[in-house]
Amino acid sequence: MCTEGGCPGAPNIRAYRSRVALSPFLGSAPLPSPVPPEDPEKASLGPVNRLGQLREWTLVLSSMGIAHAVRDIGNAWVILVAEEDRARAAEAIRLYEAENRNWPPRRQRELLPYARSLVAPLLMLSLVLFFSVTGPADRSSEWFARGTASSDRILHGELWRTVTALTLHADTLHVLGNALTGSIFLSAVNRRLGDGRGPLVVLLAGALGNWVNAVWHRGAHLSIGASTAVFGAVGILAATQLALDHRQKGRPWLERVAPVVGGLALLGMLGASPHSDLLAHLFGLGAGLVVGLATSLLVASTRSRARVAEGMEAAAVATIPAGSRAAQIASALVAAGIVLGSWALAFRNAG
Image (cartoon, rainbow, N blue to C red):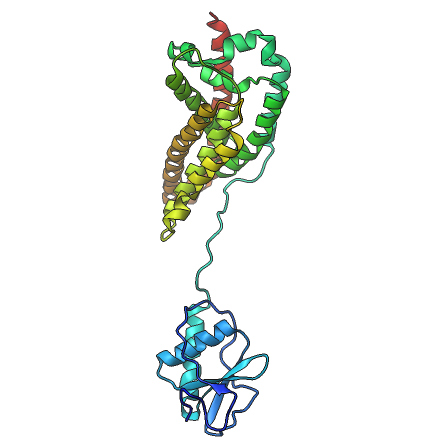
């Protein structure tokens, strides 16, 4: 009989009784070892090639009260048990491996509902083309006189400036930088919300950020550029990720707040240059969080109703994808109407 000190006549055998944390194992059930035990009254299980697996198996045997010892056979180990315990030991290990084969469960990757497209880069390209029409800010063209986000004028009713200012840029580097970062973040938003709803919510976040910026400054503060909307897109991504994480139970709070922390980190990296309007970027990020959370609630409610509809007749089910496409097209038309309508109001109410 093997004891904790070892087995008689087997100098390479040692007892194994360490307490260790369990970890997942993907492998075969315990097999009789190709190395026979020196004592004919003992049976061996193995070979075991990983130290972690060896610890798990010996812990299982200890929990079952099965006396055992471990023999080092060079590049692996075998576990020695009494012959009468071999079947019980092998069954205990088999059950343990079957129970823990897929533990811990792999975190499911997010399946983005919308495919990649060129909508975001094309929209950002339109900003560059529009810059070729307006020119840089130092030319003091009529576009800037009527479209700049002036805090005083916004607070006196010229709300269209919160939108028109998003389409104006100071110089070539300004517009190219916003076009590049905007393409990245708007593309990510569109993968989650669609090529129509995505641009609309980013536009709304940018306009809301400009309005909050005007309320904060109140005086003769001027602001231009799409960066407020770009940080709105960052906020929307953080908010939608928060909504996704909320539906996944058991996630630690550090992982839940990570999207917001990431958004603030991007604000510090991309939005805090000496010549940038840091507060406008911050308000854009905050507006994106608000708009993103509201949109997530709306989308979740819509999908819930769609799941209910799946229990209806086939004709009703067939209308769900078409309705989604119609909603995307309608959202895109609304976004375009807001921009064009804002510029129309800017030139109609010039003062």
